[in-house]
Figure 1 (cartoon, rainbow, N blue to C red):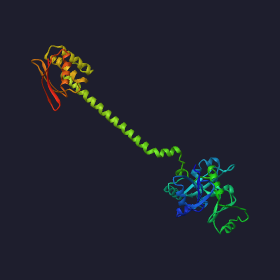
Figure 2 (figure 1 turned 120 degrees about the horizontal axis):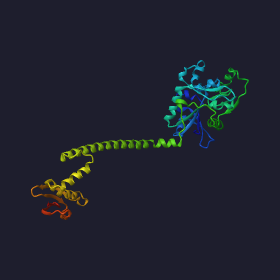
Figure 3 (figure 1 turned 90 degrees about the horizontal axis):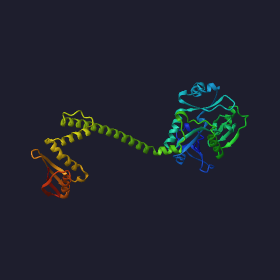
Figure 4 (figure 1 turned 180 degrees about the vertical axis):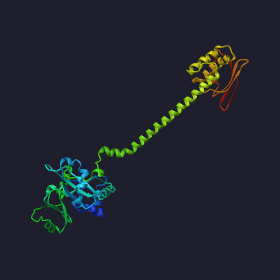
Length: 383
């Protein structure tokens, strides 16, 4: 819980100019009581978490007496229990309560205007100050009763525990007499750092009722939460990028599978077109190789073409011949030879290609060759 406490002794919730309201808070050394306008206090505590104590005149302090079974539904029944004793409609009011007083069935209740609390919270948000607790002075100072606290323009009169009345200066004696409290003895206090420390102590020890609960709940921001707020945009961006990458991968995989399926179908069609009498293909690559070997071993013209083309194709696909590019291929069925037009960056590559084919017991001769723009073009005859 935030250690900073701002005390507004006047009717802050009813104020039309919160900036000008007098605010009291302890300085950084925790001893010197500082008085300033609320606007100045907001500038001092910007980007901080604060507890604010308001005057009892902004609220109604009361009690309800219930047994434990009834108290289980206290939040729901409070508006109906107090409906006859409150001037405003229950739906416009905000009800807060505390555990029963020790050894009794009395539950302290604080009632205030709901819209005014919402506006008060909004004021602090506008000034970049996080309101984590909203308390009532007379309720936090209950241990002082019966007592009176001298404020700048009024006096806070607490004739009993969980009760408080703010009386304008000059009207104290008349009000005490009218209330029939003239014979009671009230301990007099002046607003000082000790009283503000008592407010802080009561808040730390959870001796008061925090009006910020339910829809107005304000949890303290931890270090982890602050880090999360700082890094949240980056985390969201990385998460969005990751999701986008996953979606893109799924789409690409789907496209690759579709292309592979299409290629498979085209390959099957080509196989059936080339070998119409063959059995339906199951292992295409193996069946292609089997058919090619069969053609190579037969004595037909097609077989002769395959015997020439197979080693030539192997050399074109070898890594050593990457710089060699085929330009034209022609097969002479009558004389059974291959005529190849190739290009290479230098003539040595053409010779290397020729020697590699000769190792397959084939005759290779290099016919016309010429150089154009740094590229050698040559015609080879394989038989």
